[in-house]
Each structure stands twice: as C-alpha cells, then as structure tokens.
Length: 448
Image (cartoon, rainbow, N blue to C red):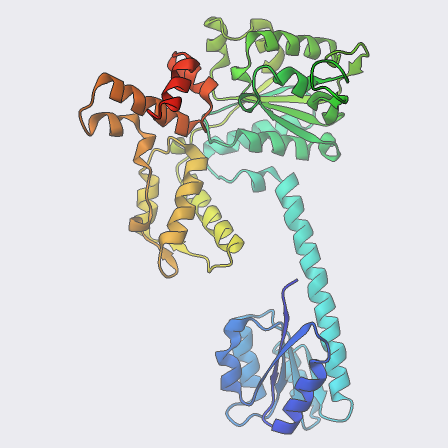
C-alpha cells in the first residue's frame, strides 16, 4: 500500500506542531503541516490520504477549504478541528462531506489518532476489495479480457457464451495478433473448470523432437538425460483446460499421436507402460485455414474433425471499426498506470490516423504502437505525429523503395518474416517453401 499522507492545516504554530509530532509517532504516516488554506490547496497534487483542517484559518474558512478539497478529489477524508463547539456548524460541515468534527481540547489529538487509524483500515480494506475485483475481472469476465464493442467482436462473445456451459472442443481461428489466447482463457475462466489449471502449449515454440515428451511426459530412463519422471502437459492439466496454440504447425507424426490420445482419452508416458487417463478440455488455435491444410495434405482429416468442435473466428482488427479507438484508450490507460504517468488522450488527428491504418499485426501491433506513442508524446495528449507505424509490416515497402538483386530481395524477405515470427526458423522455412538449412547458412554467414 502507498504511503499514508496526512496534511495538518493549523494556523496556531504551537498546536500545529503538537499535532504533527503526535501523528508522526506512527512511522507509517507521512505528515505535512500548513498554516493556511491556500498552502494546503496548492499541495493537493501530492494526493494526501487525509486532511486535518482547522476551521478558523486566516485566509479562508474551513468550509471553503473543504469544498475546494472535495472539488479536487471527493474521496479525500477531511477532519475538521474547531476551537468552538457549534452544533449547527458541525452538522453543515458533515453535510458538505467532512469525515468528522472535533472540538479542540485535551482529547483532540487522541480522537484524531483514532480517526486516522480507522480511515487507514478502511482504505486498506477498500484497496483489497478493488484488487480482488480487478483480479476477478481479469480472470472471469471475458468482455474485460477481450475489449471491443463492434458487431464482429459481439459475435465472438456470443460464441464464447455458447462454449462455456459444455465440454465441447473449441477451435479458435484468426490472424496472428488477434488474441486467440485471450479467447481460450476467457472460456476456461468462465467455465466450471476455472478452479483447475489452464495449461498452454505453443506448438511452434517447442522443437519437433521434444514436443511429444513435453505434451505426454516420460519415465525415468526413457532416453539419455531422462534422470527423473516428467509429467506431461496433458497430465498436468488434470480436470482443467489444455490450450494448443498454432496447432496447424504440428508435424504429421505428432498429429497421429495426438489423435490417439484424443480418441482414447488416455496416454502413456514415453518409456512407460502405465495408462494415464486424460480429463482435460481441449482448445486449439491457429492462424491457418485447417480445411485448406487438409486439402493440401499438411493436416490429418480425422484430427481436423476431432478438433473442429465449436469454431470461433476472430476478426482482424482492420474489420472492427471503432474498436481500434476503444483498444487504444485501454492500452494508453494501462500503460500509464503501469508506469505511474498521467493518463493521456488521443487528439482527433491521432484517432483519424489510427482508424485509417490496416494493422497487419492486429491488436498486438496496436498495443505496441500506442505504448510507443504514449512515451513519445508531450503533455497530456497523443497527437498524430506521435504515432508511428512500422513500414516493415508491408513487404512492398521494402521491395519497391529501391532496386536490388534477386539475392538481395530474398535476404530482405527472409529477414522480414524472421522478425515477424520471432525467429521461428521452422515456421519461416515452411511458409516460404525454402530449406531451413538455407536460413541457417545465411544466419551463419551474417547475410541477414
């Protein structure tokens, strides 16, 4: 919890110092003293946790200060301290939002002490509730996870809603960067399986010769280096959900093994004989057209139908209209909060620039663009000049801007897709229909 700041506003120097000393006995309190209302109001930017305010100040009344404090931040508790007991004044101040009203006497400092203790405990409880709400919102409310209000994204919400109440396998389709993993999490955390693990496997991130042991586990001694038993991801998921991202990149041999596990609902660890029952729900995702991959002989037809289940297609960001601006505001506010900087707004020119771009990198690209613009911008606004789109997202930009040799164009294309797909050589090799040894050789010779 952040520092508990207490402002003491008191025109009597001796009484003000006495209150400051007494309150400062608690090492968790940061106390600042002011002798008039103007000084207090000029320092409200420091966001005090509570204000102890003398009713009779030389430059303005306690009521005037109270009203201005509430205009600045209605949630700041203000304790009024007065030299005279006046019931009507006290009632009026409480109506205007004062936390409490104390008359100056020998017990005042102790009353303030107790009030501060109660306020701090209340703020701590409120923060815990807010944190809990935030955590629940992040995990369980899918329209908090997936931001958007367009017709296209509402269709996605509708399909998520249909998937939640059953154990049907879900296949999520969409371009890279559209948020397929968020859909999987939204389904899991809103389903009866939410109390069980959510296990994600990115097929492209695991070397081909290791994916079987990663998914299904192995027994001690199954191969060189297998010094202990390893529990695979399917077993680890238990009664939860297993999310197979980029399933379209799985090789045919592994597809056959996965099909058997899904059909039999059981597996055997590598090097073992014991049968392990599989209870996890399956969600898969891909940026490829799996039906087309089946026709081209790259994906097993029987596995395709086993995984099809309930298909959910995520629209590209360029087809989501004003969701771009909604997401931009969300990314701006989130980045500002994470980095403790003032939130910024988008000018009309900035909004127009964002709406006129086609986002080949989808939501992931927008997030990167907005975070950079937030850093580059001055003041409390983001203008169109602060927004920069990476021209390398369009192959034509670097193919046509200058003449080159065929080998030069080849190097540029390979480098572009290596950057786009996080140096996944297997994926780039397959997509460009070139040998991975060619890419390795070019990297080794520093041609890229």
